[in-house]
Length: 314
Image (cartoon, rainbow, N blue to C red; front, side):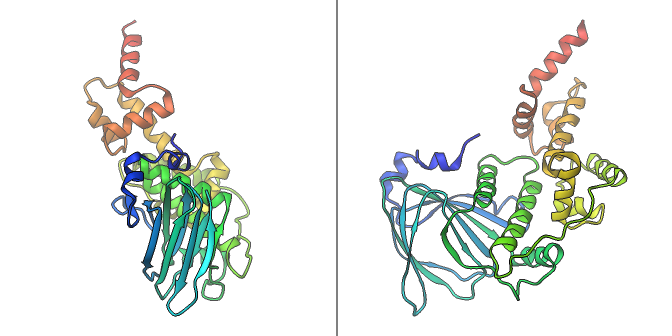
């Protein structure tokens, strides 16, 4: 699977030659139905002057991929603040009431790409109350620039790859990532270093059975993390943690595996087309089915069906 950070080192000649005058958006989650989280990837110009970042209530996290940069930023009527940015550095901005001005210069010949994550204020407030037991109004997030955090980078790269190659359960995947982002930020980037209120045990056999039955009965639907969590009465974050603790896989991985297994069963019906099998298994289309099926089983649905047909003839 492609690594966006590695790809940044091989940006096309066209992007280099054009010398962009402003950031160029090339990937976005706006049309995917992700809840509580927006992800956008940009090609960045080698130099930028007078860029005004708008005020927004959402939390903003920016991941940098590419060469070293010198960034200067300031709010209205304030002095410039200078920060050096390198590969995998992050900028964290809590919701701000005022816009700010940015300018920068790339200090190397390597073009820069950025991933911008916007976490909704409502999701952060809910996570603080449900998981941490306090309000973000008393302990707001810090404003940080030019720092590194392996977990935030890992989540960012995973979402970047999801933008590049959307999966059938991408919405569920993004919601789980949004919950992880919110809780990690609340634990490590507020004035209060809080601890997570953990449930005392994992899912019971009855809760797990209820969850499996629900997923299998609703595979064709666009399942959300909140919908799954509601089936057994947990917050989305606690549900995701307890589900992995109990089963060894994330809700997203479980739903994807159930869809692949459903497709395997339907492939035995020779009269069903691959298009119909994809839809009946909860995949967006035949292409999604083929890609995920091959990732899980090492062969395409068509080859899998042909192999089973040959075995059946003997």
